[in-house]
Amino acid sequence: LLVVANSLYESKYGGKRALGKHSWAFGKALLRSIRIAGTFSVICVLWSLWSSPSLSDWFSMWSAAGVTLVSVVWFGLFFLGATLVCLVATFVFEGPSGIATGNVGSRSEPFPFLRTAFATGIPILLLFLIGQQRVYSRIGETGSELISSVRTKRLSLPDAALLERGYYENLTTLNRFNTQLWQLYMKKPKDWVVLSQTEAIRYTDSFLGIELVPSTSIVFHGNKLSTNQWGMRDKEYQQNRPVDTYRIAMLGGSVVMGSGVADGKTFEWVLEERLNHENDGRTYARYEILNFGVGGYGPISRLMALENKALSFEPNAVFSVAHTRDYFHAINLLVHMNRLGVESPYGFLREIVGKAGIDAKMTEIEAARALNPFGDEIVAWAYRRTAEVCQQQGLVPVWILMPSGVGVREDKNTAKLTRFARNAGFTVLNLLDVFDNKKVGSLRTAAWDWHPNARAHRLIADRLYNELLTTQGMLPFVHSTNQTSAKALDSSRSGSLR
Image (cartoon, rainbow, N blue to C red; front, side, top):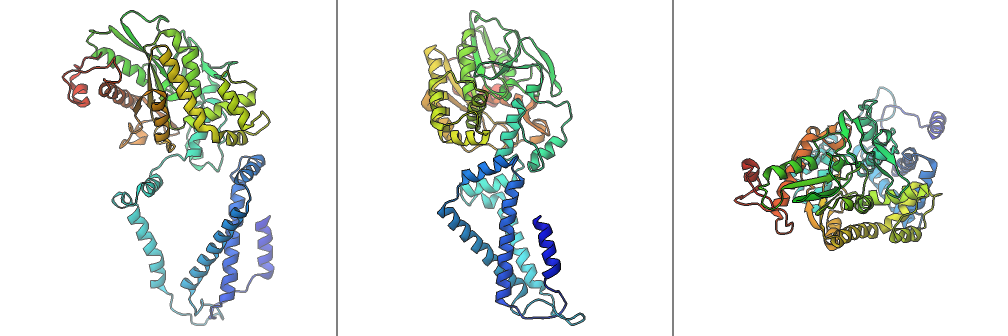
């Protein structure tokens, strides 16, 4: 409607254009600059509406931003700055002598080539120089990370969150505004369904939400996905821990579960085989890693999987695989269960929900926004509770930070999460850089799927194995002899584990 109205106005009252010459008028240039800034401001507001999934989400966004005196002042300053930029640009490109306007056939002034070449060439040269690693690495950590993120082809944080959420809930909003997701999903075949649409997943009546169906075998994302009698993506194990066996319970989400890779190719499977291959049998006859990973499990779900499932298998150690988006998963679980009317079994979480004031009538955006201020408390509590359960049972608690996916931008909370884990009593292993300096396309399950493929899982297994060796003082079951480096160990395959 605005475009049509503006077109009708221009056709009736628009200025007449003709070749020739006239003087540069400050008043006219200022008026045009104000109109340009005003048009840009209107476009920004319209774009916020265009990129919102619904009107309720759009109004929710405005209520979150808030209209205060400070925000009005900032907008006024921005508008003034935009007007001045337009005014200066008009003067630079047109000059006080004006542009060539007037009668048809009259001679116009020579085109100011050097001026325009200088005005466009210098910024391009500066952008090129700033984009060089040797240059932007010298401008400080924040600036360096910003420029590096612009140069790297990765999904944005909101798109990555949508991708993760849709993976197990089928709630992804994919449309023309999520440009990268839309481009990726246009390549996706029709049989590339989300996990929740398969027979391998079932919904529970508990706060856990979802779990894998026991004794199931399906083809998921082109590869076989099978579960054992206990509902694990793993080989068959007896529930009681065998004598002379060191057993590890592996907790996590879709990366641990091995989304998109075939049976026997997950990193925990590869790691277990290597532990047993390198085992000299002097302390333990065998090592077992039980995979309790399920797509979408965050810190709260990992805790529940430990208490309700893993403990009954008598593990010696618990590996809790975390991601930088643990905040997203924790808050998303509380929001989703609240909308379903499922109450948390933990009094602490019920108190947080009460403090946040969320209810089933709120939109997901509103509920998540109300819970966001409590994110630190929720995640830190989940870590403490997990470590406490392990310590009460005499288990070794290990917290492993892994990439959320291949080529996905990570949240900037690594230091905070690591501090929470250490304060809780975990042994901390950081594997965030496991895919650094590797080609993204060669490690993804597919171009439209950020999950690590079989090759990437082998990289994770090798890195985790080497990390376990270097932390032998913290993890009593790991010990290497006559090895000077992880590379020598990997080539000789003769290290002994304890």
